[in-house]
Picture 1: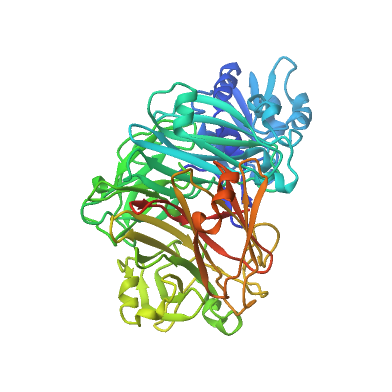
Picture 2: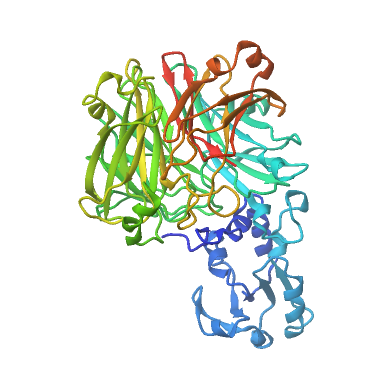
Length: 636
């Protein structure tokens, strides 16, 4: 029961049609359009959108006089149970109205107006357009920049709050008069607040706090989704953000990355609960149609037997799925594959520990378009370490680190991987060879077990980083989509954080399959612009920057840490040099002095800039020694 819609292609990027007809403001206009049509209705489908439109909006109420196409090669194909006819056959259809499934359709209508009597109404999807005030480019409705949208998990209940922080990075690409339209949706998918935020003209911070919004609109407690639509953006049609969950007590503090705006068929990397834990997958509908009962299922990674969610979820609604209800015997380090059927964007999961502490994170998109790439095992002489996935080893006196390789494409039947540990200066201090792991493996690595075999002085500054990379010593194949889940735990308080990401080729002028990846423009990506949101007092902010290199690159980075206040005014600049292959761990309270932090004020942020190399960053908050959060950063 997957939705038959196109959402994203790794070749062409995101599609905008499903966003256009599935937009929260479009849904009531679609219903009004259906009411306006007089049956029998002829459907003219010049662009092939009929199947996707019907996936999001129930067309069974329409008495159709046939489905008509323009392309002769589509003649006689089956669409929505009808055998298509050519549009020139409209004159004999007996239709009392014609629905043209296209936007910007004036020209298309003029081409077929003569095929039906003058008293027969011809309407198009232009009737469900958003107002021009909601559009960045009104002249081309399906321009992806018109649908720079995303969803975020959002909650404000007794003791549980959320704060979303992003940046007006569109201003850096020349955007003017940028604003964000927002809709807050409750668990039933009902709108409980709509508003628009005007953004300053600079690359400023933007934040939305659930407590402030609840107070502003006098709302009861809620758990649901925040929908964001950026208007007058430029350069990026992707809405990136950091989402903090925090509470009235120390037990609730975590952060997670943006939701990745394109619904996928499959997600993976959802951890099974450990002893005494509860894992909840937040199933949050991204569309104006219900998710049918039985459409969502979970299975242990690498196993064929799936357990289904026997519950309907309303349009834009939310449901907290305790994974133990479907997979009661699976335990960490088991991992779960999510059959999502394109019903929702990359979801959140929430772990409650045996002591009641909460953390939130996300699975990742599992790709279905990859095949094993045998060249990867043969180009090590050209690309050195090739694809590598860097993650922090936080200060070991306080934190323990655990690593779980996670299959993230349907082509990955084996995972031939190794983990290499480096100190902050980029010196290798230890390694662990996983061997050729099967897809269904349940093998996690405690970094402590590797460090126990090396001298106490192996990490002279008390921290470093680990890289997960391919190791073909025992065979196996690779496709370049290597992922891992990294788990951190405070040795004293037991507070924990999960983060997960995928491998890339880093810091070489040589390119392979669009790597080293660039945020803008073609490969190679050899510069850095990362956004670091800062916690509000009394929370401190931690940051771990890693300088990974597939081949030796510049001996040291030339990194600027630029502190801005909420309006985008630069307050201070710090220069740091990170050794190639090394890392730096720092805290806001140590990097910038008290006067600078006071001048920056609340909702300040840091831009991490380097034009000599590509850094990979992780960020989080610190609540003294009682709790912390951690996830990877976003760049633009």
